[in-house]
Image (cartoon, rainbow, N blue to C red; front, side, top):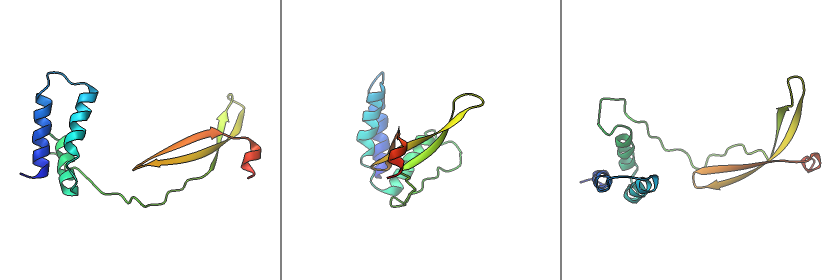
Length: 119
């Protein structure tokens, strides 16, 4: 039995073991069982099953690895146009702060004064 087959069996068993589920119980079952899927091929099988659990004839799921060390443009300041009314608009300067947590990136944006833009 492959790792994926064992994970699938355990997920189905755990889901059937409860009459009702909350978002927390569903997430707990998924996270506990899928942590064993460390092989990329087994993960592809899992996502294929998640998107097509009845195994109907559908196009195969596309799973690609992404380059984790790719550089993206992260401008410190951004200018956006704010429309005050139909005729009037003004430019607003925003400061961006980037925080990366694993594969997720969060961007904190706040307005800044003109003096800070000159730095």
